[in-house]
Image (cartoon, rainbow, N blue to C red; front, side, top):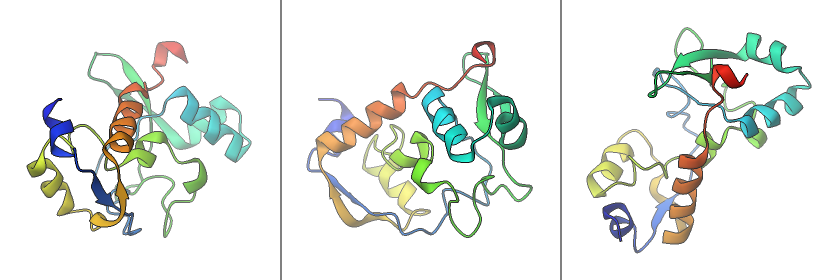
Length: 150
């Protein structure tokens, strides 16, 4: 059992409070996988080039490549935030799996630190250890589109 699995071995509580703290007012990256891109293209009924030009940017990635991410507004709001998520039914997997990301569920201190900005942590719905591990796994496997794949 890893440290993070030990931390959430009894499960965790989380329910989104729709505060939008994770969607706005601070810089960040929402990485788009091919699956994320496909869902958003269908949602907007746009061709890939038009969608990318309007809503995306190429961002340096950890491995030295450039990957596809969503643009932000000048105030750092997500491009799709307007009094809430305007693409909620097809939001990227990164958004869907929050807060069950490795660095947040790493240990009790990480979880507590994230709770300072996220009022949904430790509230509402119970999430089993298996569900948490699955969401973390999906996030790790959600590989962003690289520019050379485009």
